[in-house]
Length: 157
Image 1 (cartoon, rainbow, N blue to C red):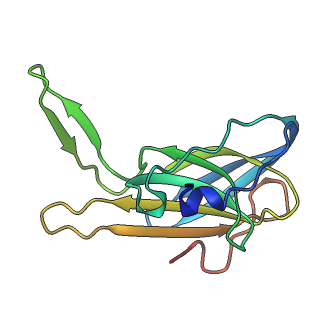
Image 2: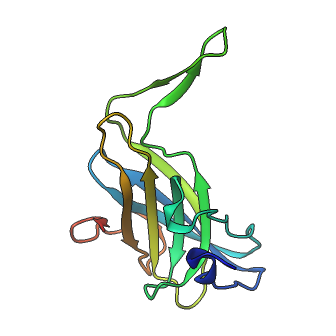
């Protein structure tokens, strides 16, 4: 039986036009800073979420605003620290101070797609807050650099 997340996946017929979207974390919010159109390309299949929305991790979804998901890429959370491994194999998580992060992602450029969803779901550790955090960014119609700021930037759900 497919999970709720898998049932919302909408098949994209490739090859098709694709957008290369650059998103940036400014220390306070995510925003789209530029995007370019690639006339024709084939993207990998959307990454699965084994436990649907209950999956732990970080992923970016390309959506239509009505719950349909066209693409999903699971990746390490760019805002978390990094893991350092000692000579004895012991792993330590290092937290880093707030910093800017820039990511480039490829998304299908087909009718209906209007949003990027940046989703983080972390496991609580010794009193820390956790849970599903979703940032929704509207995909501008304009291509190129210096994409106009969105009112209020990305918003969280």
